[in-house]
Length: 238
Image (cartoon, rainbow, N blue to C red; front, side, top):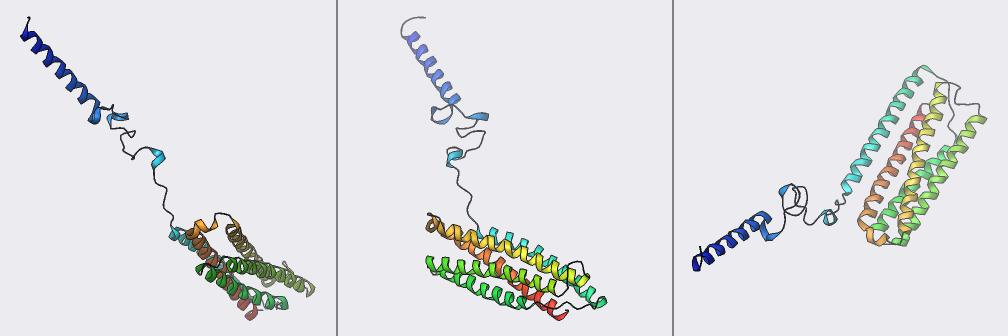
């Protein structure tokens, strides 16, 4: 075969070869990615690779739900202890005097809830210095509460009331110690808020700062309420 006919046949063969190659490369003339899909990897299109994936969105609700779950467990524990104490009090009539320092500690923790609320309000008003001052005041009152509790225990010891004396005295020490331990955790949380405030990038994390302040406030106010309940219980059934 020669002449014009041969040239036509060769042109048709070249054109067919180019079309087949383009079909094999896929759209745009590029090689397919893994698993025969387009570039993107593993058969899934991720918009340009893992480096471009969006970060998980911050959710204040997740913070609140987690804190509510923690507080529910704590409240149930103190509720069970309180029920046991009431049952023991009906059988055991040995009195346990209320230490005078426990009245002082009650006043301190009530004031600490007020100062924390002022800190929260200062944050809402974008008053960073006032926010820090009220947090430090809350820290001081919390430490004062724990100190007054230790002094109250010394008063009990001087009165001859010890942990292993009888069931009511055991509950007295156990309940106040558990509450003090949980309040110590609250002091750690407030201190964490102070650290966040002192960070150079603090203004850039306004949403997280607000969420943290709210959940820590929820914890702190709950510890306040639990102490008022315990104080009333110990005072009534002393």
